[in-house]
Each structure stands twice: as C-alpha cells, then as structure tokens.
Length: 478
Image 1 (cartoon, rainbow, N blue to C red):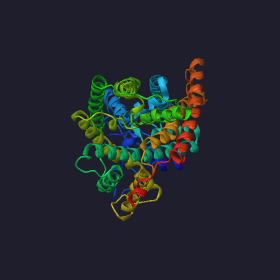
Image 2: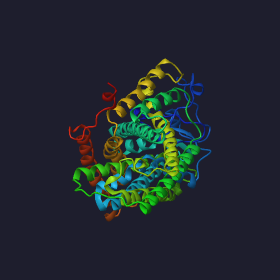
Image 3: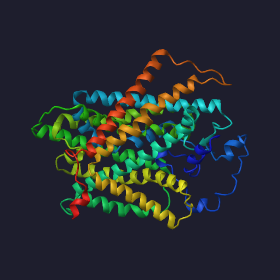
Image 4: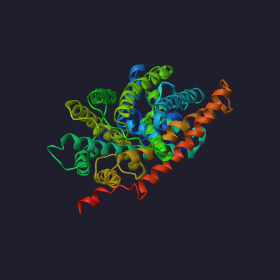
C-alpha cells in the first residue's frame, strides 16, 4: 500500500494464526509470538504474491477461511447485544413511526454493508498485486477509504472506529453494572456506580495479559447468550402484558426525543462497518451478500419482539434499559445474567483494538511490561471516569450512534462505493450505477449526515443541559 500513514494504522492490528477476526476482535498475538520480530524484514510468500503487499505487512495467509454460515454468525453476533436493551425506549421516544424506522434503518444498514463488501471486491479486481484474493488484508475498511477518499479518509475511518469502540466499551461497562446490581441488589445493595468500579478492577488483569483467540467460538457464544436473553425477556414481556394492567402515561414527544432515538437505533446496527473484514475471512467471498442477508434476518428476529413488545406493553413506563422494567421472575434473572456475561466478554473484545492502536501510536513494545500496564490501566480508567460522570448509558449510546456509527454505517459505505464506480483507470469499466440507485445513495448520504448531526447535537445538549444533567456518581460518595 502506498500511504505510510495507512500502513502504520493497519499495522496496529496483528493477525492471529491463520484466521482473520472482525475489527471488533482484532488483537495482537501474544508477546512471545512477536518478541524480536518487529525490526526484521518480513518473509516473502513463496507463492506468486506481490512483494509490495508482503513487505508492507498488509496480507496474511488465507488457507483456512470461514464459510457462509459462520460469516452470518459473525455479523449477527457483532451487532446483537446491548442495543436490544435500549430499543424499546427508543421506539417509545420516536412514536408510532419507531418500528418503521427500526426496519428501514436495518435495511439501509444492510445495503451499506453489502456496498462495503462490493467495494472490497472491486479493490481485489483492480489491485491484485496489492490485495491478492487468496491472502488476507488488515483493516480493509481503511484500505477502501484510502483508495476512494485518500489519506484523510483512512484517518477518519480509523478515528471513528476507535471512538466507537471506546464508547461501546463504556456502554457495556455501565450496562453490565446495572444488570448485576439488579440481579444482586437483595444480597449486595451497593448500586451501579460501585459495580462499575468492581467490574473495572475485575477486568483490568485480563486487559494486561494475553489476547483472546479462536473468535469464531466467541461469535457463537455472543449470539447464543443474546438469543436466550432476548427469548427470556420477550417471554416475561408477554407474561406482564397478560397478567397486569399497566397504566401507560402518554406525553408529547419532541424532535429532540426523536433524534436521540435515532442515535440509539443507529447504535444497534453499529457493527455494519466491519463487513469487509468478515468478507476478507471467507473462503468464497462471492457468497458474502447471502451472509449479510442471513445475519440481518437473525438480528431482526432478536430485535423486533423485544423492541415492539416492550413498547406496546410498558409504553412510557419503560426504562432506557428494559431489563430494569421487567417483572421479577427467574426468567428476568436468567436474562440479566446471560446479558451481563455477553457484555463482560464484549467489553474485553472491543477494548483490545483501542489498546493496540494506542500502543502502536506511543511505540509501546509488544513484550509485557510496565508501559503496557500503565497505558491499558489509563484506558480503563478513562472509561470508568466517563461511566461515573455520565451514568445514564443511553446518552452515551445516542452520542456514539449519532456520530461515528452513522458515518461508518450510513454515510461512508455508499459514498466509497459510488466513488469507486465512478473512477476511471486502466481496468475494465464497471456496470454504471442505475439512476434510481444513485438517487437512493445521495438520499442515504444526505439523510445520514442530517440525522447524525442533529442526533449528535441533541445528545450533547442532553448530556450538558442543566435540566437533564445527571449527577455524576462520585458526587454521591462525599
């Protein structure tokens, strides 16, 4: 790859064995595997592969890849999780158009993800010496942005990914603390703020030490825990709806409420930006659109019952975290426990790429040492500080969903696809984009920018407004 900045950003993510993990699970291999290898020139593949690609460290072996079903599990496992807990409140705040908005945004996110996959296929066809089809490329989203938008585009993508993962890690920490407090409040009544500190102390040693491997198992586990949690929650929603007459106050919702809900729904589809990386793992990359379709079907099967059921049964009484609104039963306890396990595991997964990027920027050695301890401890301290300062996770979720996730999922994918299709060079011309699709792309970009900007503004107003300002946790300790 020609841009040194892009190559530098991609080198912060190291390959693990012979498989390729999505960006949410991109981590460096253990220090023992990398020790003493950073300064030596890379070995060239004996196969007929470009020396440029090998020397830049942009590729890895792809002798073993994932199949179509596993790719669909990765897609569903990445996105399904914390978002489902906040969707019922988001649908209530957006009014009766909420369910329609949820379905439309899922279709738009699916289209954007498929366009990212198409972008990667185009790059492989145009630059086979840099992106060989039988090898894997690190951080393909940044590669796509570099080829279409230049170095500034790749920097924006890298920054958005890091901000998204930092925000997601903070949301996961707050949600896991709330669920554990609700689950154990009869035995340990200490409150979510204290649970955040306990969880951070518990997770800190795992952040210091080796990296997780074999992430296909993590993807399956994440999806299964979320699926059973959603099943238990939906069952309890139906029980509450049949056994209790719940009084639902109605109130007038504002545009601010609507766009806050937009940010929450966008967060629920935040994993769509990783699609090129998942596609890069596949043995048969032409089957990726089918994996996208199956993955989104699985996601909506989990999202729709809980989101619409919670909206209809609880109405205005639903909490930003629906798990705190459900009636008391073993179903709720099981759902909370499963979701807490999912969030704790997801926290370790999403924070590792942020750590690796910071270590790369600050030239921290791969070996386990004092610098790594200080940097990763500072990272989790920053997340704890944000969690204790803004204990209402919904505000952080809306802010991240309306800003970086909107860019990565709804704006940049169609923009990169259109620019690639319009490029002229020494390669066979592509089929022109039909006028109706081009109009849809412009509408998608325009609405994404408008909705994301307004949602970000309203999220910031909600966080800092005196009328809605949440008292930080540390003020309650003195």
